[in-house]
Image (spheres, rainbow, N blue to C red):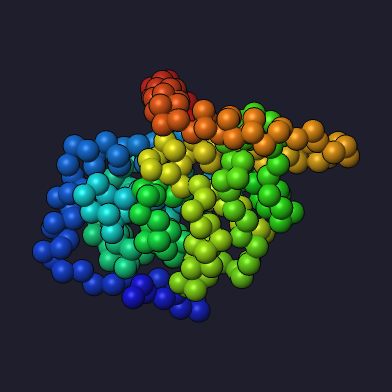
Length: 273
């Protein structure tokens, strides 16, 4: 069973057999795993650069996880000791869905990240990457407790493919709370957590992170449209489904991710953060 948070709240890692630790550490060091880990670390810096996370709260307490290739019960997660804009591959913590820390400082594990992400990884074998953030437009729209409407082309990517989790019960500190999120998410790619934030899932870092950017963008556009006081014109359902099919093509994610990684590298070489 996963470890439970205490009323502190504190998080206690589970013990791991040294043979298992060595096995997983080796899988996490393959060329494929190293590339995936670099993508994950870059994702935090990219989200910071595009302005989704800024300031202490957003830059510290959001989280993204990624399964280890060949070890599906283990994933990397960002450390509480690093903000998004400073996160490097060496800063990532490697742990299991049961709470066993393979690499990294156990005290730097965000207990809410563990409960949310381990539950989704356990329930959704199709999901390799899970992103959770608290961006401003996303949180504002989440407070409305309603689904996104198909009012712009980019936002159609979430048409009939996002969930609403309306059972806010405080900071996620136990497996009952995370199980409720999993039930709300179901088989959808994304979830809006009422009074809380946003979740996106994907088969890769590119999928989850690009979707997170576009989910925040869509929330912002919906709020702007609502602020006009006029009812928005909705895109017809068949057209929205056509847009979603085109924009969720894996080739688009791979291409856009390459561009985002290139822009990040150029900015960091120029000393820009």
